[in-house]
Image 1 (cartoon, rainbow, N blue to C red):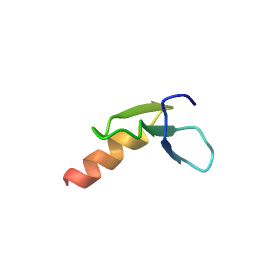
Image 2 (image 1 turned 45 degrees about the horizontal axis):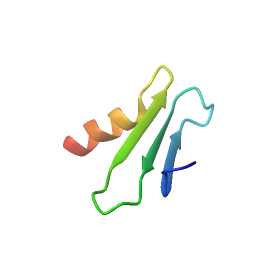
Image 3 (image 1 turned 135 degrees about the vertical axis):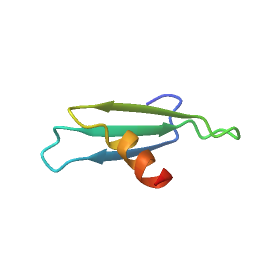
Image 4 (image 1 turned 90 degrees about the vertical axis):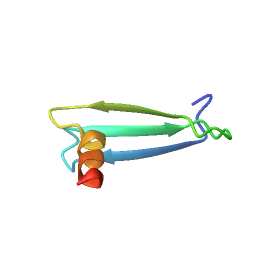
Length: 51
């Protein structure tokens, strides 16, 4: 994908919920998060990290 240097995927085994985090590869570390499904894996990971 243009403008994406790295992508991290996180998904449930049934693929009902997933998240994709794209990094632009630049020096300013810009990230874009896309997620879908009844659960939000990236949001849940952030909450677990803050806990």
